[in-house]
Amino acid sequence: MPCDLQVFLNGHYSGEDLVPKFTNAEPWKKVFGPVFIYVNSGPAGTDSLSLWEDAKSQTANEVQRWPYNFPVSEDFPNSDQRGSISGRLLIMDRFLSEDYISAESAYVGLALPGAVGSWQRECKGYQFWTRADSDGFFSINNIRTGDYNLYAWVPGFIGDYRNDEIITITEGCVIALGDLVYEPPRDGPTLWEIGIPDRSAAEFYVPDPNPMYVNKLYINHPDKFRQYGLWERYADLYPNNDLVYTVGVSDYRRDWFYAQVTRKKDDKSYQATTWQIKFTLDTVVQSGTYKLRLAIASATLSELQVRFNDPKAYRPHFTTGLFGRDNSIARHGIHGLYWLFNVNIPSYLLVGGGNTIFLTQPRSWSPFQGIMYDYIRLEGPADPYSNKEKSSHILY
Image 1 (tube, rainbow, N blue to C red):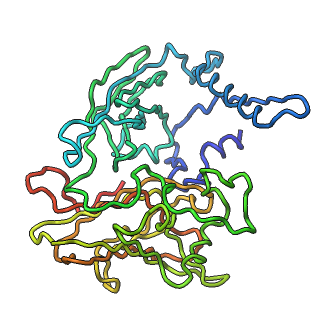
Image 2: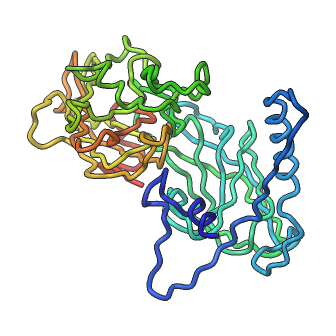
């Protein structure tokens, strides 16, 4: 039992944010499991891959059988004591289409009521998730009774969706939500973008590992990022100067390192890093405000300072402050908890012609401090007739 709780409630990968917190004498209980363990075997000479395929087939069978009907605990309701919901998620982004866009392959789920994006850190209640089809239709079955918010995020779009209405699941209920509409954060047209908004840094440049640390399981494997010690390769590739990315010239698949980590100086010290994004504006709309969208796939005890055209500005034009307790870099992951920062850029900070954005991660007492970017977008001036959000930044 202590081992099970350690696995289900430990912050080994995602950090302190996913360790449940309790007040004095707070009552709490939660069912973990049942846990199915499948052990297969074959005669001598059996191809190990065939055992792996057999195990995956058995997993698919068990998924279809869930929730099991053999537990007798009152804390594990049977299928007929649960409820279901269905609906369709659509997207409205007037800079991409005048019509609704189907939220293809959206992740849609129920979690305890909370703020937008709160499901990421909610670990004391139950969550039920599915993926929408190509037209945005979704259904979630076998939901425990209780009150929930419906949350979603859509690959290809930034931000989080939350339906504001509390959804109450009762025994045997079948709830049809109809069409739901998500309006992703957007003020103006895209001037340029880096990466793919999918909450992962997998599309960026992942280096080859140090030959001393090669894991043969991940040679010619799509999860190349699982090799050990990749954070140290940044100092090998950029021994003196930091990464510079030129919009329209650079390719994020080969020119954007998968994580903005510290640079190792010697065996005991590390150095802060500043990355540059260079871009050109033909003209600057003096009466407008530009917007920089910074979607973060993971952060480890880091800070992101943003400066425009002045790397030595004493005060950054924007800073996140200290944020993030993921262990994605050290644990060979490619994403952790998601963050979105929306930064207003007054037009006087930009110039017609060449511009540079400086991204500094100043905290540098560990090799594992760093930021994994998900996606970066610069938008042109906001439409003055739009009612979309105008805040300097939103964090969740």
